[in-house]
Image (tube, rainbow, N blue to C red):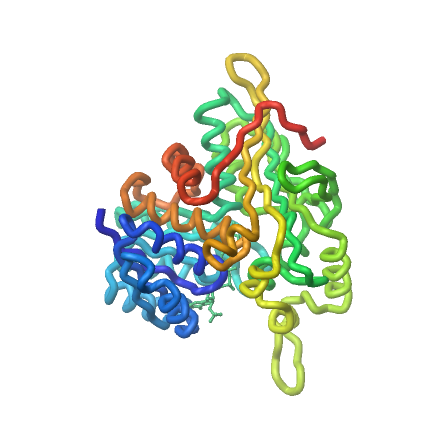
Length: 401
Ligand code: NDP
């Protein structure tokens, strides 16, 4: 089946998605990589051209500008736009997709640049518009959100009559050798982990201080790690889409060195998103911090170890209690060998490619704005095994207390 995909962004995640599209030339006949810095798009093109049957184009675009986006879409005429820029660009890219009646896929929900508050409400507000235009917006097609939602939908479809408890466990057992660095965009990462924790229980949100709830867990392939309860965006949609759910939580592992550095940076004001005046010009401390930290793209060749991300699901089938754990283990080194990126970008870039593929091939085909767990999980689960993110199931997992 003939397909054209416009990819916005040329950072860590986009680089993996582009590699994966080029491995999947049967679906991705033509791609265009467009970002603010065109040289990064061109570098990807020159690395991959000649190794793939996928035809690669590049362009410069400022995705904050709807008219520029519309002009680009009209010139390339893609089947789908895969948004791998930053969450700040979600709405302008969705507007351009609406104006040109083009399907839309992303991996992170919109957040306004000036407040660190991510919620689906802004994108869910487009539901009727997308439905009326006859196009699909697939929200959150990374790993978490993304594969975690597909895991929950798969569990619901095959193993449960009702689901009561979900714990999403995100473990990065990788070591890049730096005392402090973030594995993806530092600004987005630090905004996420310095926010209050939150989880859903008995029909309401319960808020915690940052890193207030800590547990230890023994991860297959990694070993024992400390993990902390965080708010994570898929909790919002899963709490609505998994009917009857009593509690859903999200835990992420952090090492002591990372947390100590983060605390210091916070204490001195370096993680703030409030503008300050510095030598006559306004700067945002967190953006300045980003400029001095290692570029996440440079971590790949230094990182060893594995990630383990998955969902522990408890519920009932045929009147009997069922405990189910489904997870993926991904090796940083193997990823680097294959596509030149570490596992955090890899585990996001592969599902991004798959989401675009599901929409392009029409395997996922309904007009409107949907979170990933609202689609049939089976084809996506099948393709995960094929494209580098095989999953493992256990019906007797350790539970999180
Ligand atoms: P990077 O910072 O590495 O890359 C972002 C890219 O977007 C850069 O190429 C950047 O260009 C480009 N960009 C930024 N602003 C604009 C703009 N206005 N117009 C056009 N291009 C722009 O980020 P990552 O690759 O690490 O992350 C990409 C996305 O993936 C983020 O939204 C992140 O939240 C999400 N993510 C999702 C995960 C999941 O599991 N669901 C996990 C990890 C990330 P330039 O180089 O010029 O700045």
